[in-house]
Image 1 (spheres, helix red, strand yellow):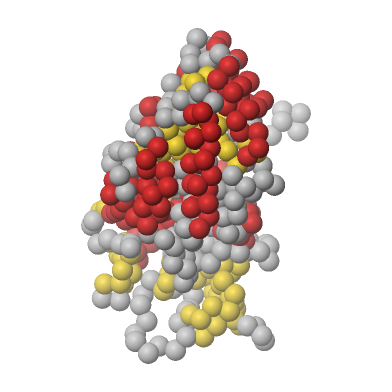
Image 2: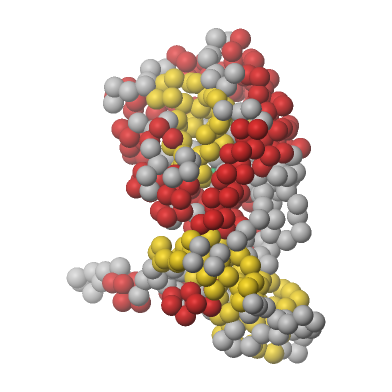
Length: 421
Ligand SMILES: *Cc1c(COP(=O)(O)O)cnc(C)c1O
């Protein structure tokens, strides 16, 4: 469910016409619907509550780290899952209290760990024995005890794109299953560390419950085993990963996901953390772009738009599908014809869609790439010296630029010529 709809043939975000934003901001730009973000949070929170789980939803900020997005969720009670000092600082700046922040990631530096310890965040998810030892030394030096989850790798196939599967033993993430009890015993013995939680995140854009079920079952067995070893596991961090519909996939609902978690893990007496990213913001964003020109070819038609792979990397990176919506709805019965939709960047990978059936498009027409709220702006770059794509948030009949487009002068000013040149 999202709040992007046609009204009188004009595509709108809530009550604002996309064309009006384009006129004010220029293209390309991202637009987010505040009501959609809030709705996704509530549906998940209600599902977790209905399943009897005492859970905190920690938004995986990497999916969309804009302060206005994080604050929208923080005001509803969300915490944050962060993977860098930059994200931790953003979460704090957006108003997430430290006691609702979890720090994940396979390569946290000593400086990042030190900053997290000083900030007094809720939990640090440790992914290796060397990290555990380093964290212990840093916490001890700071005179603190940090609550830690060991991120375990359950060796479960998430059945998703290879580049976003994280819970197989050949992936870089988490502690290998067979070593987990030993690492908890070590954690128990180290100063500055309180191993109170288990964390698990098996991948992203999961569209079936089976892999979650398998991982939760393994977690359940593990909690029993660790408790028998005298380790007081009080919290389970279930990670993120629930998918959203991009094309015709039908992922499980948040309520179904929560029910499975409740069935398998609900009687362990644990508190829960979940770390959804895509689920909360994926469907809450569009990337709006203008057709630069239509280039006819002998075998296919190319629709060249002013957005490119640097603005939305997912098609180039994961062969991802994004629905393409004309901003002016064509009259019923308008014939569609296949076209390739491409950006201006000098890479063949800069292709948003191949042989997609589209209504007739001409230079100047606006199109919107759907389901672009997660891992869209977050991954944008300035490749080809293209200014970072701006972001806009809509709430009812208002919109605000939540990150402006930098000027070319600002971009060039970032470079420095050495004084010997
Ligand atoms: C990326 C990530 C998430 C969020 O994944 P989504 O698929 O966007 O829900 C959660 N936890 C960790 C550790 C991650 O790396």
